[in-house]
Length: 86
View 1 (spheres, rainbow, N blue to C red):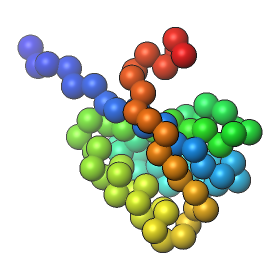
View 2 (view 1 turned 90 degrees about the vertical axis):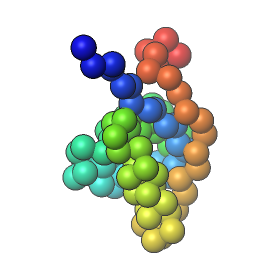
View 3 (view 1 turned 180 degrees about the vertical axis):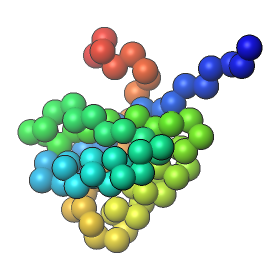
């Protein structure tokens, strides 16, 4: 039996007006990760990253920021997969 490899959940603070755009980018690259909005007023999003695509997700975030596509994408912390308890 293969060992289950869990993904990584990354918490970011972004400009609330950019949430839909960030979500659309990650939906287009559906293998990489999924965006969950935790608090739309504060611009708090969580990106659930597939285990094999962690580096790709970080590159996508860097590209969004360095390319000027989003105003702000501040890394807050990595959260576990027990987000429902927070």
